[in-house]
Each structure stands twice: as structure tokens, then as C-alpha cells.
Length: 420
Image (tube, rainbow, N blue to C red):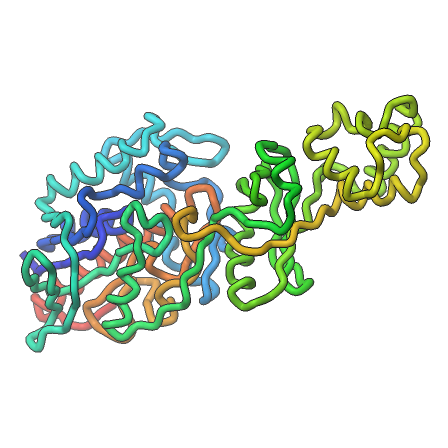
């Protein structure tokens, strides 16, 4: 036995780290404050576990330190991840680049991780709460818990973020990191819905439609995306909203004015869309404006757009003036939503913010300020877009942290010294 590795958190990154460290010869103990391990894994990919993605580049990640996420991914990438899971028994299903277990069950992923951890004699302490962590004068770390004191030669913090606290991510890991000298960038909800000003959303609630969205902060374009927009009674949801939401959260926290411009006809350029409206007005001139969009837009949306354009639903389509069609075009191609807030951490899939990555070596996941301390997963200031990217970062950072912790202990034991 080369030494003891303690891991705080039995989520995706923590379990990956535990397996990697145990395979490298370490005696591994995982401390989890929930009553079950891997709870958050079960909710990923709508219960199917979108464990990675064929497309993997820097544009898929957000981080305060440019390049950090891809340096981590480079150390344990997609092919290594697929090999890791295939070796555990997971058959991979590819849905247009989105990768899932063939069983379509997130529980399959959690189960094989726990089975391998057990096979490697990893000890998992459940319902175990840490009150504080201190450095041992003789080296390593002392973990004070409600189940007793643990002595570890190396420590990996994989305690998650503040997103989805019901699964165990309650932000407690940030306090442990701070207590060990690390800086934490303020965590905010990400991959989350937007709450918007106005009551018209109640009229459009339940509608799903292809749309392009652009998010602005004090008039500056911050992010854009396209996909299936979901209208809910309090505002906007759906994948394109999730993808831009972290920028909304950060801007709102800085007290900036945040708006979203929605294009309900993203397949048409503005000139083409205006031509389409004029042709429909001519062809369907006998219809009232309230029926003008039938077959083109969901009626819940069209009624709101007509109202915002100042057009009575009873006026004949053939009587619409060029000015009125122009106002309708503006609402159709650039509907403005004023964002008042993002939904809370309970609704968020991940966080933006976390442990400052400038204080972590991406090649080893070791702290740059405290030897023997490592980080993995969501606790770090890294958030990916929807599509398996946050789990890929969890697998990559977890395996690297586990391997590095064990290898550095082995070097220290054999007298080779130094840390890579």
C-alpha cells in the first residue's frame, strides 16, 4: 500500500477519482454526506446519463482561466473515457454525437462505478459530515467528521457545487477549500431557466418552438444559441436558454440590465421574413389578423406578437399596412424579454464559479498552493454547456486527480520525490 487517499464527495468525479487512485495502488476512503453515493448521476441526461459527447472543444466550456478545461480533457479525453466505461461493462449508444449507456439508464453508470469501487476495496462513508480539515504536522490531512477523525496522506475535494442541492451539492465543499487557503469565485446558477418581466408568458406557457436567442447585458451581446425554446408561465426555458443562462446570472449579479432577443423564425433572414409576411397578407387577405399566423406559428405566440405590434386580431390581413407588417416582423424576429432573475440553485444543473482554477495544476489537478491537495469536478470554476460536457469534465478531472494523488504518494514512498 503506497498511502491513503481521502476523497470528499461520492459523485461522478469523486467515484472516478476513487477508482483511479485505487487502481494505482492507494488505499482509498470516500466521505459522502448523503445517504447514498452517486445521487446526482441519476438525474443527468433526464435519467439516461449523457456521459460525454463526440464534439469536444474549448467552445463547450466556460472558465475564468482560458484553456484550463481543455488541458484537463487533454489529460484524459473522450477515447480514454469510453475505454474506461467499456472496461466497466457500459455499452455506449451514440445519438448524433451525444453519448449514453445503451441501457438508457443513468443507474447503470452509477452502478458500475460503485461495483468497481467495491472491487477495489474503496471504503465509502455515507451520511458522514466533515466539520473541518486541517493539515497534519507529520504530513497529510486530518478530517474531523461526525463519525470520527480520519488521517489521509493526500486529499481530493470533489464535493460538487451548489447546483441541485437535493442531490448533495450544497456548496459545503467551497468552505472546505477556503479553509485550506483557496479562493472561490462566487458560485451562481447555470444551465437554468430565466424569469422574465411581464404577464404575457402565462398566455404562451407550454409552447415549444424552434428559436434563436441572443442574450444582452447593458446592450452588449454576451451569448447566443439556437434550439427548442420552451415558454413557461414565468419566462423562458429550454436548451438554448440553458446555454446562455450563466451569462445572465453573472450579469444580473453585477446589477446589469439583461435582455433576451428571441427570433421565432431563425431559418429566415429578416428580408426574407418580411417578404413572407407581405405574400401571406396578399394571399390570405380575406382572413382576420388573428388567423394570419395559423399554420406558421403556435397561436399562443401569434396572439401575443399581434398585441405587442399593436394590431387588432379582427382587422383583415389584406388591410395591414407596410408599417404594421414591419412592427410584426420586429416582434417575430426580435421579440424582447427583460430578464429579472435566473431560477435558484435548486433548479440549476450546474454552477458558474467555484474554486479558482489559477490555483490548480490542470495536468495533475493538484493545488498550486498546498501539496497533497487535489480538486475534481464541479467544485472548480468550470461549467460546460448541455450535452455531456460537465460529466466529461468530471470523469477527466477525477481520473487525473486520483492517478496523480496515488503516483505522487508512490514517488514519495520510494524516495523518487518531487511532483510532476
